[in-house]
Length: 319
Ligand code: F6P
Figure 1 (cartoon, rainbow, N blue to C red):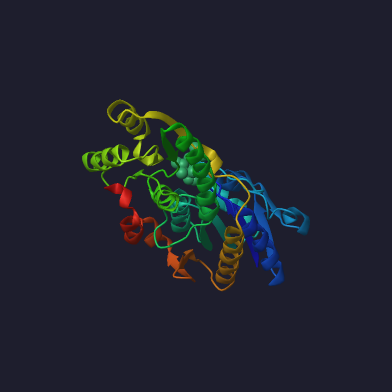
Figure 2 (cartoon, rainbow, N blue to C red):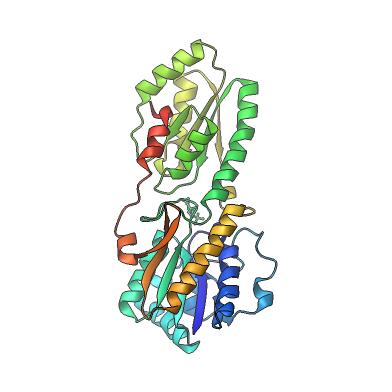
C-alpha cells in the first residue's frame, strides 16, 4: 500500500515525531510512505513525494512541521477538492493520515463524503478542543511553554506589586487557560466556558489585598476577548498597577516535550495500523483513560468538546 501523511491547520509540537514515526513504521510494515507538503494547499497542487530516510532524519527535537502546514481556503471549493483527489490517484495513494484540528477534520469529512478516500485523523492542536479525545498532540509542550512564561511573570509581578493580565491561546476553548491557572496558582481565570462573576472575585481579591496580597496574576483565554476589559478593571477599579502580556504564537512553537514525542509516535502507529486494515476509513484516533481508540469523523466534528468538569472544579479562582 501507499500511505501519505500531511499536516493541516495550526502547527503543534510533536508533529515531526508523528511524521517520522509514520515514515519509519510504514516502511517497517513493508509499505510505501509519502509526504504531502503544505497541507491541503499542497495536496491541491500536488506537492507530494515518496519519503526517504533522509527526509525525516534529525527532526524529532524540532517544533513546527518539516512538511509544513496550511489553512486552505481553496479546499472549500469543489473544483480544488477534485484536484486534490486527482493527485491522490496520480500517486496511487491508498490511505491518508491527517494531523490537524477541528477545521481540518471538517474538511476531510466533506472530502470523504465526495470521494472514496481512506482517511484517518490524528488530533493535533495546542487548544485541546477536539471532541472525543482527552489529548491532542502538542498540548503538553504548549502548557509547559505557558508555565515557564507565567513563572517568569510571577517574579516581576511580585517584585513590583503589580497585576498582570496574561492572554493565552485557545480560539473557542479555555483548556490552556484553565490548566495553566490551576498549575500556576493564578488569582483570576477567564475562560469561555464559565461566566465571569466579577463581584464575587472582586470581593475575594479586595479582602486578600487588604490582608497582605501584593500581586495578581490573571489568565485570560484568547477566545473570551476580555483581556483589555480585565486589565481596565484591575487598574481603574482595583487600583493595581497593571500590565498585559499576550503570549501569542510562542505557545505554538518550541522543542516538543518527551510526552509529545511519545504521543506523536503512538498516534502515528495507531493511524498506520488502522489504515492498513481498512479501505474507506473516516476515523480519528483518540486517546482516553490511557488507551487509544477510534471515533467516526462525523461524531468528532458534530459534537462540542467540553473542558473536563473535574478540572473546572479545581479552578477555585472562578469565584
Ligand atoms: O492552532 C490553534 C490556534 O493556535 C488557536 O489557539 C489560535 O486561536 C489560532 O490557532 C491562531 O491561528 P493563526 O496561527 O492562523 O493565527
